[in-house]
Figure (cartoon, rainbow, N blue to C red):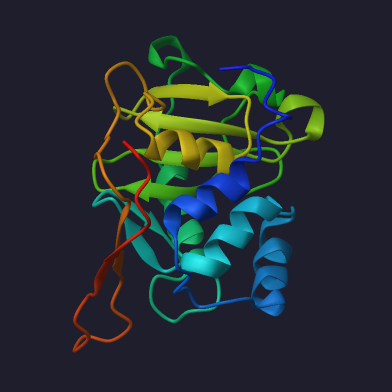
Length: 206
């Protein structure tokens, strides 16, 4: 989905849509550890959204993790899903949108600079990956839908999140999960006795 988006401030628009920050906050050391483990930097816009709002559930489907929390830890999430995806036998003949040609690799790898880093997931089994070496080494977003359909998006992660929340089909045809009104956010419990708290972003005229 290539387009020129240089003139629109997607990160600012996304943060305005999400409203009051209730996240775990900044932790440069946690990000440094995670990026050292991965062997690559993660997008600055994604890190900013995570710092301000994670760990959180967004609009009932999308979970955003943080690298410095004990539960809902982003590093553990990436590690676990990297192992799970690595056990799948990916068959390019039956796989739509095979990322390997773009990544210049004969094998589909995960959690490494030359492959796909799983950053976000939904309760519908959808996944959002960051490909650090996509688009001439500038990074690229891939989405996995229906277990074997990859969709490439030439955009930043903040643009992807913004477009997801306004109801675009980013995981494939008819895949949108749009809810009119303010964005709904729900805290993810840090302890077993915690009660999740629900709050809403500002009105957004839709």
